[in-house]
Image: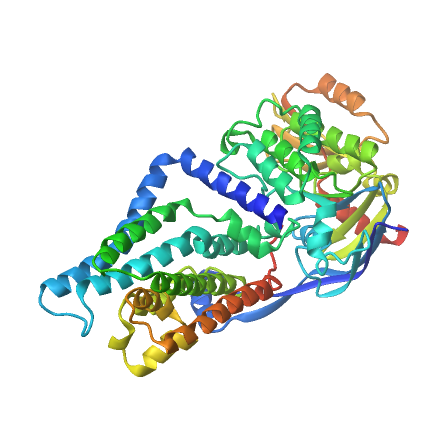
Amino acid sequence: MPVIDVKHLTKTYKTYKRGAGMGQTFKSFFQREEVMVHAVNDISFAIEQGEICGILGPNGAGKSTAIKMLCGALYPTSGEIQVLGYSPARDRKRYVGKIGAVFGQKSQLIWDIPPIDSFNMNRAIYGIATPDFKSRLEELTELLDIAHVIEKPTRVLSLGERMKCEFVMAMLHQPDILFLDEPTIGLDVIAKVKIREFVHQMNKKQNMTCILTTHDLEDVEELAHRVIVINHGEKVFDDSLQRLKLFLGEKKRVSFTFSESVQGTVFDNAYTKVIDRPSDFQITLEVDTAYISISDFLEDISRKHRFSDISVKELPIQQVVMNIYENAGGY
Amino acid sequence: MKRYLDVYKQCMYSAAQSAVAYRMNFIVSSLITLVGNILFPLVTLLIYRAGTSFPGWSLYEVLLIQSVFTMSSGLSSVIFGGVLWTTMSHVREGSFEVILLKPLNPLFYIVATTFSTDSIGLLLGGISLFIFSAAHAGAISALYWLQFAGLFIAGTAVLAGLSLMMAAMSFKWVGNSRISELADSVLHIGKYPLPIFPKAVQAVASMIIPVGMIGFFPASALLGRAQASDFAAILPCFLFLAAGVWIYRHMIRLYEGVGG
């Protein structure tokens, strides 16, 4: 039986079109055009206990609205949500004690005081017994390597340290389900790796179900067993990571800054496609790693050209969505 | 219940810690709030020094009304004062879900987390003025003190209800940053002897928006000038608070968050 069961979930809200420029702004003061926004449109899915499900989608796709409804913070316009046998918005007070949430852009920590006091606040809120609180805090701070920062004021902590403290806040009461909304946004690689390791361990140790919204494909690759892709409020993909990779074609984006002009040089071939050429010295290529490994590709390029800078990135999520649409027949 | 008390205690501790973290801000804010709110008794003093008066009320009796009003405002600000601005900012920034994620009554949690140390100055100022003016009121019987306590609590309930109603408006009317000025203009009535106003205003200030209970009625009880009918105004006060709680809880359902 799934722990999360979502049927025909829809969230619609009313907003107003204000236009651009002075004239339209003035006009909108007297007469505003109503716009109905379908933030989430007829989405259904089910998630099993212990599963890590990544919800992917570009900005404004409806991921955060969906996760807020799953957390009980927003009422759905229509449709049904059952999580752990609760209706999140209706049974909010009883339900939220069973879940944890980390919002990458909204802090639960109290800004002016050390995280340890925010943790103590959660101890009181969730009614955690003091010995349990102490042992869990010790375990979590050790896992996240933040024991040395929890007594410093929150405002002096780095973004990475703060985000790790947010995870402690969300995990102290040992939730059955953890909701993560863009948890790695703005973090450096080291902090991202640490947080992904932490989620992995919690999932394995406590068989904790985890829902993760992100537009960072690496988060999904590292963590998720399953992926749901949302675009314009609608579900466009719901399957395993392996199947998503079929759509991605295992491609990477590699950007070079060359030491000499590469004007006129042809880079397109069976496994490489030019994406952007902002100057005679710079180029962004899409490399299909199913045909050539990144190391072989770099070796090949460095034999022919000298370069001063390089970056290797995953495909942007917009591209993933486009690929899914292009191959919609296959899904 | 124990859990709620524990949370409130923890919130007070956090508020005290935040105040200590910005000591200068705490001192300046307390002074500004105090000065801004105790200036109006000075106007009363000037009125009486100029030879005019509120008919039937001596200077110290009017000061007593105004000190009770200041105390009530101070107590309400300490406990409920932050609800309006915090709700407004959560709704505008779309961070109210942080409140809704806690397994508590959201209204209790937001009241607890907005415990305002800045308003302690106002409460202390009100208490000082109260002691000064009550000392000139002559002997006050235990019964009058008891009546005063009951009416004072009812007056604080009115202020709490008003704070909650204004805060609740934020869910629908996002960014209504000047709504408190509207409330302040109504509250002014409570700072003066109610009989100086027309009968219609007296009726509204007693039974509909019972602002008379914030200063006038409790002070009258202390002076032995309360009439039996004044106590009938207690019921609308608690109804007003109940309405504030109901409206706030109802309006939470309208929360829509902001784009992620």
